[in-house]
Length: 385
Image (tube, rainbow, N blue to C red; front, side, top):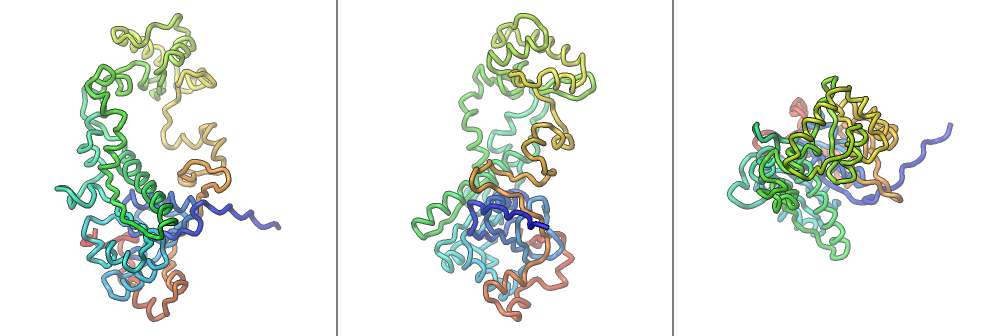
């Protein structure tokens, strides 16, 4: 019996990340770092699992009582060995539990400290509660989404939480880690989901209230253009049409057997184009159209439900062994690829603290008390959120 091949070392191998974050953006950010080879140690406040297990692959979980001096001392000992710390508390909370930047950077001057919050560390809303939809509303993103004859619609929590939060924070962390390799100095990263959402709108600000995007639900990309929207099929499922450029539109029109393509950029023709496409797509089930457009340059694709994605031929070809939570969530690197590591939710407090030199007595004093083990998730009590 031969041993399984050893996965290649990721590009972040040798980087230790201490993760104090909860909810979604911080854990997703640190999962990306773990996929890239970083050692991620999640410091939780309980022993009953984690709030979002899907974001825990490749991570080591420990439980420290940060309300106790011994728990804080153990965190400080761990931070001395770390390159990065990520936290998602409201401003001021980390300071109260001995995990603020000033205190930790004094212990480890090369520490890259990322505070990932909704509104950032300053400003009138800095200490207010919020969720993805809150940051979308205040950054202009939500007001630009959804049909023109209905209320704005949020695209799950993908934009503010994950794109504006997790991904922007990961970029900041990577930049600071690279800089610290040369300077020997860490720094504080103020990553705000609202700021990230504002940045993601960079291309769209100039288009608002112009013929390209006159209002929500209108314009080339907002749902008004008949060649950039979804259409219902005979079986109640949908196809997505993205035939924006002339060549793509001509391919769409001719593949459907509709004759010579009209000038699709003439707005006065949009109603008739929309009617023709709607009637045509309604005449056959979705998978008929999927087969018809396969291999064409018409930018037509089936709208897949989440449980259909893993059966798609392209997804299966690129991720043949993947399940719904096992795809490395970063671009492919040719020499040091990302790896979706195994999920291990076990409590590794003892082994992690022994490895950094703590005694058994210190470990016992630092770990979360047994009676706290029933708390939901490796989660902080409400007063610390």
